[in-house]
Image 1 (cartoon, one colour):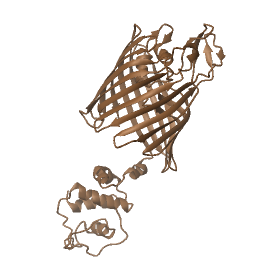
Image 2 (spheres, rainbow, N blue to C red; image 1 turned 90 degrees about the vertical axis):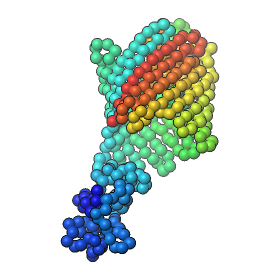
Image 3 (tube, helix red, strand yellow; image 1 turned 90 degrees about the horizontal axis):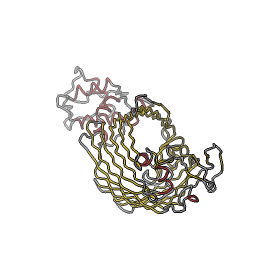
Image 4 (cartoon, rainbow, N blue to C red; image 1 turned 135 degrees about the vertical axis):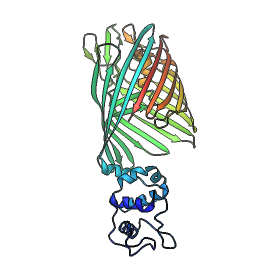
Length: 435
């Protein structure tokens, strides 16, 4: 595109100056159709000519040269949103932030997520399967320069049977921002503890993070994710049909030991105030349903490869007094190679994990829960046996970007509980679309 035409376009988009430069360039006469635009831009310091006082408007411009002009216009407060969007990559290279323009054009940003999955499960001899469509719509509203509001609306359509069960819920609502050097989240937000292996779901509470090379996170909240109730026999052989953790708190820290090595250390505690019997009687748990978890880990990160190992120690879980053989020490190891990137078609990644988890893990992440919580084992689910006994086994996954913003994946679990050796296998396939 010729320089004179581009500059006229810039003027039409709102680039103004308070004064004119008198014949700023020898090759732009006063009668030239772009004279006024070029004069104003020169007076504003947005464009410059060559050493011989020429503008050379018939010369073709590079995108980088145009980006420099847009950057200068932005610095002058010009309304050049459309040009800034067009030259966003070049402006990034120049170190010019376009975020301010996004705030001006729309205070609320809407993004989306759509996933179809099919899962097949075999747990302690019981087989099951499920198929579901999930849609999520995220709303990010800018409150001020330091704070934003985040909300999420979720719809699930169960395709497992012919009934067509579906539900729509407002699943996330929180403020995200900073108080001085502390990053703050408050409300109902996602919380992943110890890479999601101790907990990976919703919480209602407050979350504080501080630091860079040494990063410290502390929280106090009510866990609201699925899979936090359990059932067992009490000392009088009455069936306890459920208890719910009603509060959780903890502190976790990570420190960079070098360019590619991180160390983590933390403590988390989940508490419950009561339990329900088969007669719907609410009673006090002897130890308040406490799950206490210590963790320490190392993670090595290279360009395309990540390897991590984490040690865990628990108090045996909320029902340890009824299960004295609970395994209190455990670990997991995880390795990942490359990764599927939504904006890069053909990108792919693989990963494996080995679990030797202790009893007392209160709420596993959604993926481990798929292998531990779908089928029944007698009158209790495998997931609850994992809570009381711990579990061991391995997991593998592979993902590939089949089209822009479309990632297909497959995941497989082969697990069993540590004390009773109840076997659990699961195969999960999905297609995730983001927009």
